[in-house]
Length: 450
Image (cartoon, rainbow, N blue to C red; front, side, top):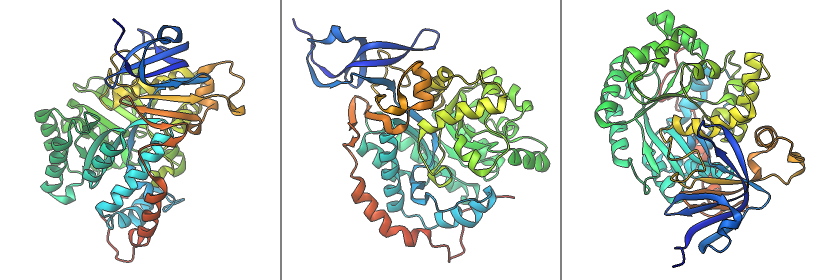
């Protein structure tokens, strides 16, 4: 009896693989067989020469990698890209971003999310963790365009109990949506905008409903120092006191994490991770970055992120991988840290763990979801190849991604997006921009404490 046809077979590639110690390696002339949205086999190309398949992709000269994961962003904020430039954090929030966000409609959020998904898919990102408003619209875009996402409806304590309840209702309503491509989280904004009582209530809801929590905390050193001055504790100690360190917690940024926080992070009873987005820290002129080495030493995974395009100007996780490696070398004063292979580990397995999808994505291994990107290294900027890991991290660019596959479905083929019409959505978004960016009303959705 002949074998059943595969849904998709990718042949002739060099596949990035992990060994049983989670170390990075590369398999030459590999083939990836996909059935029922899952990677069935990673084998040699010769072994699948006669295997029937609904779709075949010849990937000779390309590297197959697990799809990248953007572990913290605000996807609809691409609509604000370039609007608030060269400002310190408090002015960025109070004078521009939070006044403009008071204008947001659900249609603005939908168009922004759709444009963001196009950018992510073209950059080889197959999953993103989003923390924003009007998230029903984002969930609909994710379901339609085929990408994977962890979504959370953000809230402030200034909204009263309604904000927290809305975040929970969203998480429960959309959990497991889009054929399982959507996971959800509770999304309190930050310890400086959410009260201890609300953080405690959020932790209780997370445990009661088996939901993770996605929060900004210790974003920068100024926040940590302000928290110490006002409350006698760091933001991480606030998360501990309110019970959030006993939940599955994703902390955005963490550049203000200090040495006294490390024992707390080491003994958390939940799955705690940190998302790092170094481009934004450089742009804001923050004096510190995410302490990746220290976090790794206490067993906290660090995933790669971009934050929103209003601060980062880009959703390019490839750039985040490169900058993470470079900034960590500079911060530690050690060229041996972070190596290219370590950077790829953060981009794959650690990012998957950060968003609660460890074992499901982040690896080209049998049983994992078929989230795969193909990278073309034939360009002059990637040749010759002496060290493939170094080429991927320090020479390749997001524009070298040729094909993006999520859950076994091809979303981009030879740089052509198959599920999103960019010109049409940009035309409508551009028409809506004057009303969106108007600040004459003097309103803000929140106040950033200075």
